[in-house]
Length: 294
Image (cartoon, rainbow, N blue to C red; front, side, top):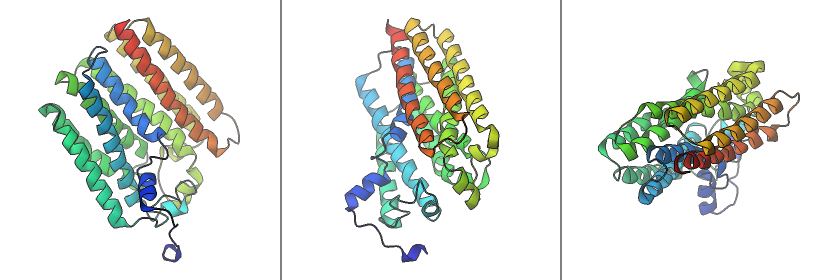
């Protein structure tokens, strides 16, 4: 029983750092990537440095809040999942009250940063909050909860782009669509490592929804991402640097699809593919900047 567990004797500050996933930066960076895509593209490669700082801090605060909200929702499920059983709320290293305080602090920080933005962008930030809060519960009622996460990720594009321009443009939506399909791809991979536990607990995921065809679904999502990014490149008339970066991304995604098609994949491979997508995202960011300024 959970009530019989003894919380690990680790310092509170370290438990909070783990609650915020500061020990696993890939998840924070992979949200920051599409936000940076948007702010640099909208600003034609040279956004104001203070705005870039606000976007970076905002993504960190928002992702921190999202992680803690997720762990609060799942504090009774996580102990039964191998990958998540050592999370601070699941292991009772931190109390629910501490988790709530951390959420409020993170959301307050995000809210203060949002005040720096123009009114249109501020209200986009407000619109994103229900999606962020709903995502952790989506796995209980929605067959593809990763789609909810992808829409939440997409807000990073809308917010960052409009923070520069004050509006949303046709190119914005191609980048938004690319972000949604990319997120569906890498988060389905991430969910594949939890399939056995999720099925046992009755929790839904895209990996379970697609079943044996999950690798094909991931391949389709990455292919769609390439299509949306290519369309973005044509619309914005990006130069050769972008196309080289997109070529590198394509090679990476083909390699990931090939690995997912193999039999008896060790669970750590799914995490490796997830983390490699962070690097792919930054390669694309460099290509976007190069495609604008070179």
